[in-house]
Image 1 (cartoon, helix red, strand yellow):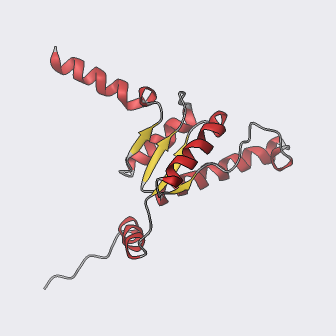
Image 2 (cartoon, rainbow, N blue to C red):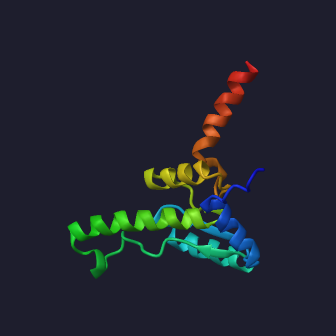
Length: 141
């Protein structure tokens, strides 16, 4: 007699979202230099019926919460962990902006490692698009 395998945490989360009839959840990623574009993307995704999560802090702008450099570094690490949690929670990722820095590149890789679909407002900046194009060229030659 075989017993059903327990659900993985990811399967349990997907099951809970389905049982609760939650709309798709999209997490917005990208450089905080694109906060205005993120707000516009949030508006568009929300009006399309999705739950949107995005960065909540722009540490490039002065604020008392990150005015101390030591505390700012610790906060950055906590915010990075928080954003990875948002990626785990989300059903898909939307990368905003025409530039991909190291942090965003790491978020894209993390999302893809979890099997999350990744969309881009500027598909030409997809870090995997170049690899894909190079592989296609090698395969056709």
